[in-house]
Length: 126
Image (cartoon, rainbow, N blue to C red):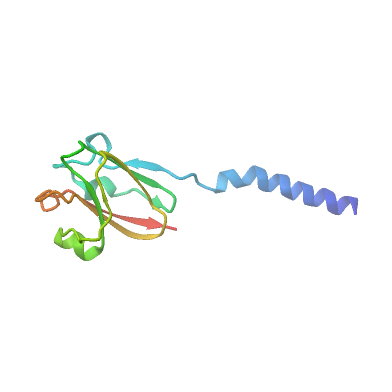
């Protein structure tokens, strides 16, 4: 019995030591880096190469009153259309927790901004 208990304790210690190395912490991404959420930023290029995961957070920084962040579906993203029931954020420092895997779509709902490129699509992995 003592040897079985010793083995179980050793396994528990090994799991405690190894687990933090295998579980990745959630990341926070400032959309557009130093440029923030603004006109004239290539958000496709910004997102390229990043590996977004469930639990990560996107931070949209912008001048309050000049922009907003609207969470939309694929069709609204492609058309730069703001559905009447779409979640809209407008604080100037908005954080979106990526809580499920899939493709997420964001646009600026201010007229003309999405059409000029102020939109972001990210793939979130489980």
